[in-house]
Length: 398
Image 1 (cartoon, rainbow, N blue to C red):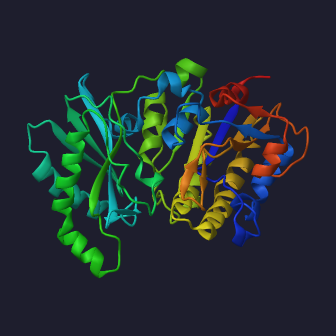
Image 2 (cartoon, rainbow, N blue to C red):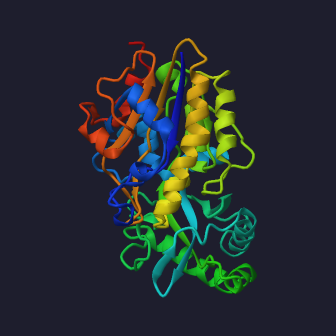
Image 3 (cartoon, rainbow, N blue to C red):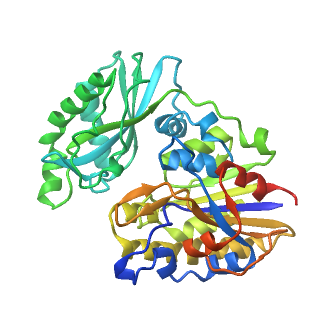
């Protein structure tokens, strides 16, 4: 049997007044998603377990069948796996965002979605001043604003950190690293701000009316991950298509193949068509193919519901449609569509409410025909409280 998973990141939402109180999923034209929901099963699944915050690290592990209470090592270790970083027993790794903070306000968690080339130049400058060779600190450049810092030694187990995308347009006071061990991180963040303040790249970005990368923001710390492979857990091969390091890291840990797709990004300028076509091709070679599209989440973090609607429509046309058609060329197949978590345009933050899923294919027929929306999913009789159990249902032979 062939299996496809499509993750429109952060697509679930609440009603928006300017959309006649519809959610973006309700407002979007998405005939393929609706057809899958009408043909198969629809319901809700809780991907944020108790005592966890809604984030793609926790929620994607849960979605793919891994209990975060057992296997979640922290956000940064998952991204370290994407970069192939080898962490020793005394290493701590943490996310290092480039952000825009003005007058103590988190204006932009992504520094205006700074480009890779500019970001790498800024990381080089930070590295020279804060991480001399042979010292306890390393900076590793990722994609756009998303980077990593490794600290050899130290103890950050009691440090509390906050994702910068959780405090959009809010004062940072009260959200900086805190607790035993936080002084080291606070010192690095303050010194980093001094280095970045008048950097040539930021001078030019201001002149162009773009958000400067004024600070580094350290969060999501953890130690090396230890996760059983998907083959060990489910006896299936797998492949991942994504532009996000976090998802690549999870795929690496699961023993999946990361498929490189030219032209895809973690923003709404991604090549949706390429993602869909590469996913279709991958189905010929792998049991499970997961296609993750970040665009709806990023639009939500900007509070841009119009772009969110358009991104959902593009995913439906160029990703869901071709994959749905390709799957039907196989004798047995299943398709699962669901966001990892909800991201609300109104708050510009993730939300831990259960998310809607639609599943169609072999032995997954509709009991009650409903379109793919949050409301229809809530009105279903299929609700999975432990999100990691959904994968067993998706992959089972029955």
